[in-house]
Length: 458
Picture (cartoon, rainbow, N blue to C red):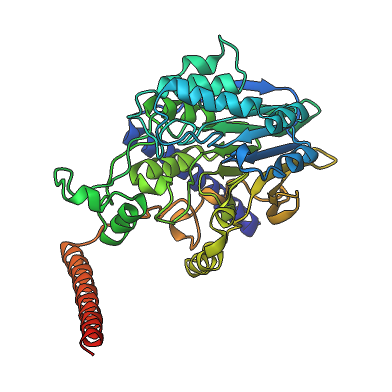
């Protein structure tokens, strides 16, 4: 009699501790960010199941290889989401009229016209190129016009709610009226309208420094190695969008949450655009996930011109990019070198044209919802996938985060702070390397010069 009673008391204590921990994470988030968590209804509601979601990014119809679009159409998705870079204006296209011209050309292109005719529903968000500014952010002077041009392309009516927002973000919830567990919420973030600039300069007033750091790869690698910008306080979403996201996640009844970010979220790769280059914003996102604990989060991203699936402790991020000009297509001649570097960096990717699919399916008793996340090639064949049968505990990713070896919810930084001694040593090493290379080059040139003169004398 005593043992069952002790077991019952122990279970009650465990449950109470878990509840206290959940309350603490929400209270800590509210105190830290000066907000009050409160649920908000989805922007759009559909009384129908979302059986298949397809998505992709980065398209240029005029490149000629458009076989991927019939493959997407054959998959017959209930919804197709563009996750950015619908068009690619040239570098001199700095006006809304020019940007609109590119969107109009894409909409009228025969490939897109047939694609649009075949698909039931198309929606999405811009990234940087179709926003109108490479690596674009909140300083872009035409961001309001860019938002309206995107919504024109997506055929949103004049009075649509997304036209009245500062940003093109939105949410949609799909509910199967015959199966209550089949409730999927799609949350699409605007990663450009309010995003601050990445940390690019160690010395903003040093004009000699900026030309040397002009290329983004050099800048980001330098910051990664040196630790500059490790505490950069830049934001991604802006306060209004953060409040909206909090409402979409807090006490959400959805069984699965699909969160779309045009740039990667959980990657540790320092060169590509990602949340990790804005460490305060990424920390807020992970704290929001811990505070609200949305069930079965799946993150979708694009931008990088390769595809891949990252997974840790029940949280998945699938990247699909590009639809028409992925990395191995653009840089076919150096593909073996790129492959070697990516393998050395332990980045499992698919470097050819691709799109993504998520299949949602409930069991016969409507007690669970499975998720099959797939990366597809341009012929519609699976190249990467991960399957979740719906039996997992949806709260497991949020428990004991500090004790877990693999989780996306801690150690979120890409750029780590370094000491002054490390910075001096790094600069000295680079300077010594450059000096040695200069000396060797001069030595080689002198020998060549002497040989040439010796031949003339003979």
